[in-house]
Length: 421
Image (cartoon, rainbow, N blue to C red; front, side, top):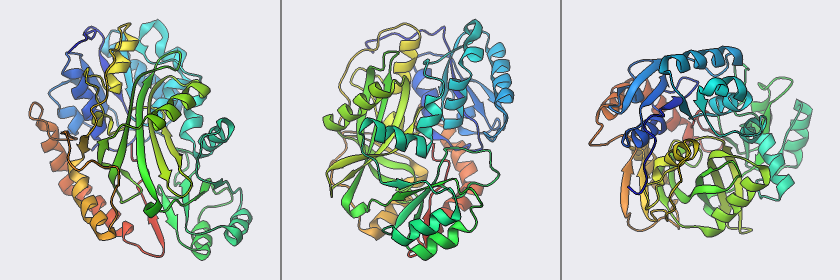
């Protein structure tokens, strides 16, 4: 490879919450581990796929929900820093971790404990918030679905009387300290009556965003992954199209392709420069054929689970770009590997069945892949695959069946899992 990493600076996968079958964390461990970077990870226990990787030097079992007091989470991370004993690059895999790092930069960076992109303190929380993101899009002229933010049941009644259905309901914040969020992820609501019935359980302060539904027959799902330096300049920027997700049309990526899209890359780079973000991003956008606009749906201010879809001809992905930049090394330029695809084995098969039932196809998906990256199977690191299968055969399979049943509801609501990561 045309670059050398600093093998004296380890990486730490930071995740808060109970989702042990996380292929993104495994991908990051493999990506840097194959270059000789010592890798550590926070895991639910010692028997997760990430903990079983041959490229992981040590797992730190720490079962969290993400709703703990920030001081407790910072204290735990500082304990881990002492155990590692040298400056370490932080790699957050969820919003809870990204927001915590941004809001406690001084404590975590003090004494050279951790390395991470320095960003405006409140920006990651605002970007992870559906309302905050919508407001930033409006402020900077970036297209996003029309949205309403009801503050009471009366507001919802008023919305139901005039809105065009179906609509989509999402939790206003990416994560919350409430015991039970208003909706379980992305929820498609077909009728005003369905909305009013569902809203009765949302309490005095609904905490939801009611959003325009973009019909899949008139839309395409695109993704952008990138790493931006301290000047908000892209050192690695990739575009691709999502072929299938699970649950269908609303959940995490199950199958995707790298597709060159200069217009989308320019849109993302300009938006990041305007808001002044630094670090790794994972964007979900939907191209609306009705008006020819890319509409920003989600802004994840951290590594996305499918980031290994993207690698440049120089061998750079967003995690490698971040490690190189934070350790003072140049990030080599290189074109993305157009036509490359990414498959998440345990969810792509049920997604394929569901998509064939619906008759939906993605126009921009290449007819043939130039190469394939599997989320779990790697010939040089087999244990994560077998660990995933062992855990997936129990509670994982029951959860998959529950999502499948939910996704088949026709006229009512369709829910997607909140923790997509």
